[in-house]
Image 1 (cartoon, rainbow, N blue to C red):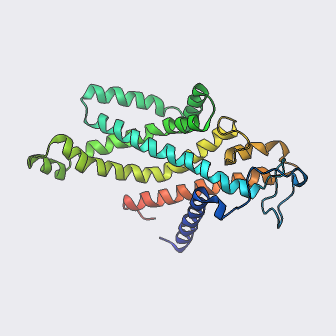
Image 2 (image 1 turned 60 degrees about the horizontal axis):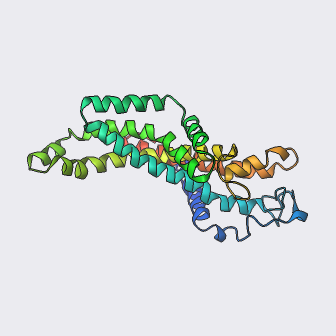
Image 3 (image 1 turned 90 degrees about the horizontal axis):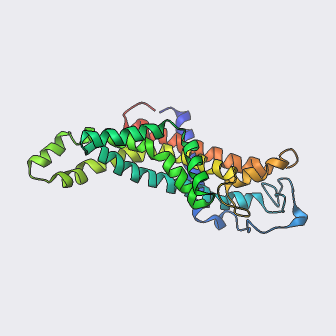
Amino acid sequence: MTALRRILLTLAAVLLLVVLVAAIAPWLLAPTDPIQTHVRDALLPPGPAHPFGTDQSGRDVYARVVHGAGRSLGIGVLATVLAVVVGLLIGGLAGTAPRFVDATLMRTNDVLMAFPEFLLALVVVAILGPGVVNVAIGVTLGAIPVYVRLARAQTQVLRRAEHVEAARILGVGALAAFRRHVVPGVLGTLSVLATIGLGSSILAAAGLSFLGLGPAEPTPEWGLMLSGGRNVLGQAWWISVFPGLAITLTVLAATFLGRTLRARVEGRAV
């Protein structure tokens, strides 16, 4: 690994750590109330009192970015975890079931994979209606197909591995051998992919919120904040730029760490 890549990897890890702290304990970084309005302080540019400026209602943009990390990151993490679990279940079933069941599941999965993840999530939320829960469901369903395909491929490889066959010869039942020897290996592979998919889930959730399908005002959420400042972008650029930077840097950091981890697991040079 080159020195530049080490520096970038360290910066990405530090950034994600800061975002994690902001998501878990935002008051440590921004004690200001993110929904408290001060009409006299509306549209103030970044300065000592307000590092990221204020919005149309005089709310502190820095406090809203920090407190918005919990919802933006929370939706992405929740959707990714659920997608991994469901992908493991469906992919594991497809990898061990009779051929006609495998074919049915995978052809359905192929149809879903033909649609971009964000478009699939958008369709789901359009059907279910706006809201944080429905956004999480939509992002989860949009991410599942990738994990299903990988879980199926890994299941078919691991179920024929020598240690699994040895366990069966020693009298271990098929279900027990699958649970003890196949599932951990598949889950490990999916976990590596999930570090990359986390960035996509955060981006998809922010995109849906930008379209008005996620949390409602005055809830601090990065995508919603980005949308709230678009009409005054020429007059108060900071309202949209700072939450946009938060989304961009978080997604880049998560993706960079995920790709580095995947390269190490696969034994490739990083």
